[in-house]
Length: 347
Image 1 (cartoon, rainbow, N blue to C red):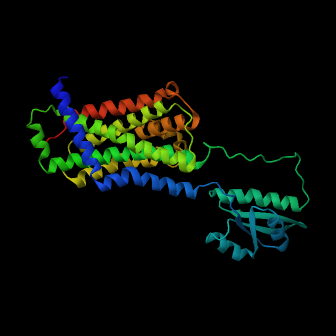
Image 2 (image 1 turned 30 degrees about the vertical axis):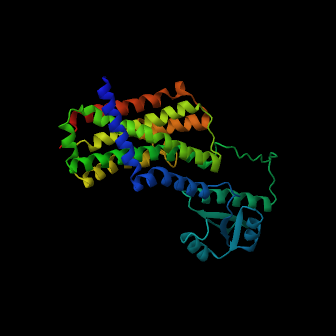
Image 3 (image 1 turned 120 degrees about the horizontal axis):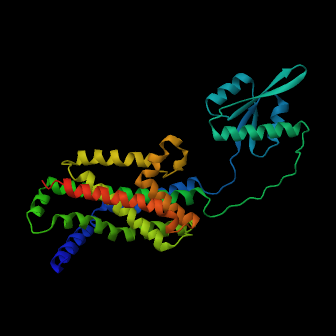
């Protein structure tokens, strides 16, 4: 590459970087929004005492037994009131006493698809059995552990980082390219001596320049405000952040390579990103999805990026252990960028 080509590539990259910084909306979505989202999730899922679960019982004896457990708040009510309270979400479980051959049987009415209701069922049965005189066959004690890395905020920060890198890369590149096409700027560019690949490469390089500030600000805030751990090598985390950014920059170039209007590119962006928002484990583990679609889920670039960053930050995994994720990301960079170079429309 000649000095003239290097100079033109540098100027194109510098212009793209400065244009991004001059857009207040871009600054908000790239820097401010992920921090606000992390603050909201950190507050919502902060370490706090266990919730007191509301339950109902149909007899005074059952109510008294349930009230003996510190994790339950028991209210006496008849069966009809209890059914209504269950249906309206006022209680999680209703304990109903039913006579059976001279002995009382307790029926538990609850929604087994609700995790809190299942917890209430375990606590209620334990409280009633203890009140009836049952004693544990094996002595047990609790040793509570609150370790950094096992909290929800630790889990979600890499997910938010991956989601933000995807959004800022794709939206930033897609909209600016289509805007240039609408204003006939691309047509003027192609008439210049500039190699076409330099114009597209300048978008990727400008994203890397912006990435440094974007990642340092967000992860620095997460470390200071929430104590999120960094157990793996920082340079490998930086490598995956850069790789993630250029992957979605390449996808943004591909999506915007033919679109002529903002409405068209917006629809295409949502079509590409929406499945990854849902499937890639941003807010919950991607392993929750059925096994039959796991190969598809694991092949998505956002899944690979988030898995790699979580492995590095929370488990201290190194690059040799994250080779599969790196390979997936490299594929999603090379293939879209190569296709974008071939089909890119300059008019």
